[in-house]
Amino acid sequence: MQVEDKFTSVSIRQYGDEKWRAQLMYKDEEGNWKKTSRVLETTGRDTGRSKQVWKAASYEAEELRRALNEEARAAQELAALGIRPGETVSDYVSFYIEGRRPHVERSTAAEYDRILSKLIAPGIGSIGLDALTPDDVQGWINALAKQFAPVTVRKALVLLRSAMTQAVERDRLAKNPTRTVKAPKLEAPKPNALDEKGRAKVAQFIAIDPATKTNIGFALALYMGLREGEVCGLRWRAVDLEDKTLTIRETIGHEGSRWYPKEPKTDGSARTLPIPDVLVAALKARRAQMNEERMSTGRDLSMLYVIGGADGSFMQPHYLSNRWRRTADALELIGTEGKRPTFHDLRHTFATAAIAHGVDVKSVSSMMGHANAAMTMNTYASADPDAKRRASDAVARAIEAEVSRHANDGQILTLGRTGTED
Image 1 (cartoon, rainbow, N blue to C red):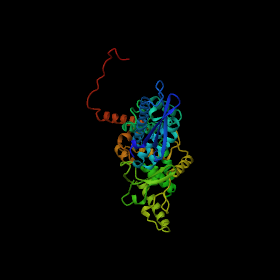
Image 2 (cartoon, rainbow, N blue to C red):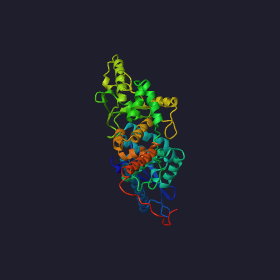
Image 3 (cartoon, rainbow, N blue to C red):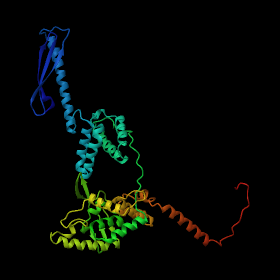
Image 4 (cartoon, rainbow, N blue to C red):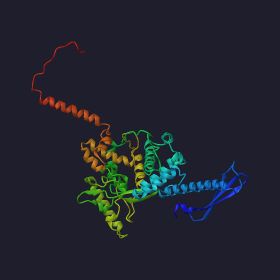
């Protein structure tokens, strides 16, 4: 339906002594006829049936029809973009999320929804999109910073900025209201890794019963640096105990309270890793146990999860984390930051120990599935509290050895005082 087709049947009638009423019939979006009217001022003119008055009233009525058509045309253009007149910031961010939903992981889309409902909507969501200013956004960010961690506040700003950037690109806004807005500064992450004594204590605990589900999970993080989602998503088809390698092909993600298997987030996260000998025997024992259990179900062993059930189920990451927390409490473990280590800190422990014992950073980065070696270096190079002492001692020993090797190369001259020495 053409916009102009919506407004027809203009009628003009006298309204009082010096006024006229113009009435227009129009169709709504469902095609139903409605009517609107406007009182036309004709004060100072002959209010009889003169052609002059009729012409003036007709002109104003036509102006009304033209204005309504322009409003309808603008509404159609906005509707084509999924936008409704009078929309709020929440409306547009929701529209932006829906456009992104087919292109991101379900867990990512769920996080967008959470940020919108918990952080954006309560603060600036009701402000009209066209009315949002940089001052509004900065005030909102400052308020969030008093309640939430910097990383949470930054996530909220990134989502809002992305949505507003799209609004500008689609000519919905003239300027991005998030421009010049500053988010709280993020402190460099400090891994709460286990030191040498803590690592030994965990290794001894695992060795007591190495083939249990949870202990296999702990060992995969401690000895190989796997993430909890990667541990829970590891299937036997990805484990080659003859070649002593395993391949990260899947991880367990979540959408709200629902957990599901998915591909690794980045190409670097999909990787093949060598299995240390200390783990090979435990994995063989675990596989033999699962092979017996799956006989009653008839399931293919290769498709079962290493720390899952014989029925094909996987262990949810939060359950593995909870079991680790109980274990860490029982062992009275304390990380390098003076706190109880989380399950993810076992991954930190692997990287810290690897670098502390001379493994090159590029290899550690590859095993961790990091995007680049710089990320690994910045995070772990100084995580070992004894690293600086060992580095200092190593340099001192090296210089002492050089002195011994070159002791007879020449005579050391003792210089006299020049008057400038203390």
